[in-house]
Length: 175
Image 1 (cartoon, rainbow, N blue to C red):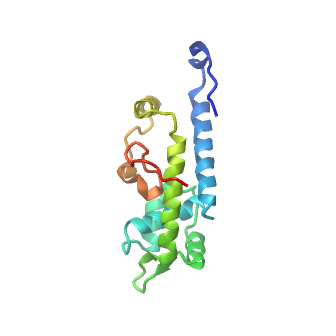
Image 2: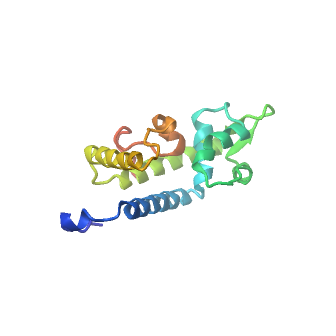
Image 3: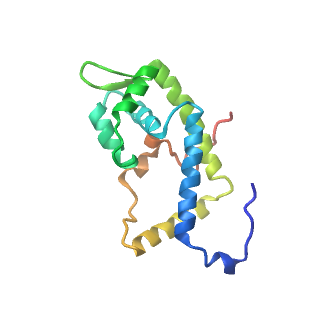
């Protein structure tokens, strides 16, 4: 799809809150649709990705603590674990550590490849310079309104939530 051009005078008066909200909704919907191809919800993806990143280091409680910031308020991770257990993607050792099963490892690899392609699609036609400029503008607006514009602590490990940068991850896989 081609982005329609408008005169700069018209665009300069657009409400940033509206456009930031539309961008958020569209990107999340696209990501959810990508995950649906593997029959995963976004929270299930977070769990599988986190456990796969550091095998043998996560319990149910530590996963929920780590990923709670990304979740809707009040989300219970218990049904997410139950779904992943019944699907055969995760198991739990006697010491309470969660592990990916071989099926989970294959699912993680397939889903990660899909997410990398989706992220590349989201960034299609956007140079790294433009992307960084957009982030700088958004961060300045956040700061100007009293929000926290600091880069989040987890940003250096975005693979944990399936959002690797298309500017640092190399070429997306085909398929």
